[in-house]
Image 1 (cartoon, rainbow, N blue to C red):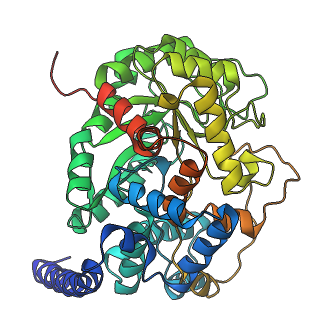
Image 2 (image 1 turned 135 degrees about the vertical axis):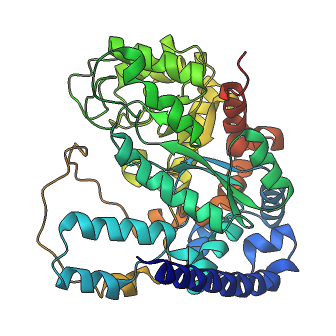
Length: 447
């Protein structure tokens, strides 16, 4: 690109961004007069209204329970212990054109992911949908999935770049938090933020020495990553993932990796680790270990759950178990009430200081279906090596999925209130416990 073309392109981008900012400010002004509780409940687009009604019909709160729960949610710092920011619809025409031009499967998947994670930056309709989802959820911060599962630093860098870009451009609404104080500042300002987690420990993969192999841990910390998966479903050099039948546990190298994460200030996350790997990680760590998005194995021992002995080890490390919103892992009806059953189980058996909610879901744009229908169907591809998902015959219902919708976060709080939790304990479950571990782990000074 020559200098003139570059300058013209830059000017066009600046103009487009300024126009979007002006229009978004106008849209934001439309809801500015709403008080914090009204912001959770009023001016919901039809699809958001539908999933909200599904959850309300399930909980059937009294007027006083609903009023108290919504006020508590609006007042509280709400921190999703593992999730995804609201996702934009893709540009179906652009993807269809790329397929017609011969784009490979990996190219198409890259386009899809980039559009879902960043298209709300430049498209006004998607931006309004994105900001609406944040508003009605009442969520202050998400421990954002900002890395694709694996150990390759370049692979892990892509999602982090996308969310860094989005928060750089939309920082007046959703910022990137570097330290826990940034999350508190976002809450005080009535705004939102992302606290980044990578889906793997970045490794040099040269195996010369342990310090050289782990050099990227600190680099990714400096880039803003504050939590890392030890494993995904499969075995890696750190330990066995939750899909491995052998459940061989933490490796010697895994112990060194956790020690480096402790030193640098990164939370070890065993959500996708095998049961033995999870237990041993919690036992050797000098700082809290978490299962950021899991379920109570004492209710249903799914391979993604954590049985009681593993939960006990996590609790003893000072960590927490984040209960997810995936019906298949929750089992039973797999709905909002089932998710609250799992919260109950951990809170009552191990203490309210050691449970959180890590939804592991995202709100997807109302325009996604229309755009996806524009994309030609492609031949089925092989199952990704990283997946290793054991098959089962569980059937998820639309009612269960709708009741657990990410924008129904305010009703998670209402549900906890209905179950007799004090306001102080609810504040811990919906954000306080995540903040405590974040503060205990962060490392800034040389001491």
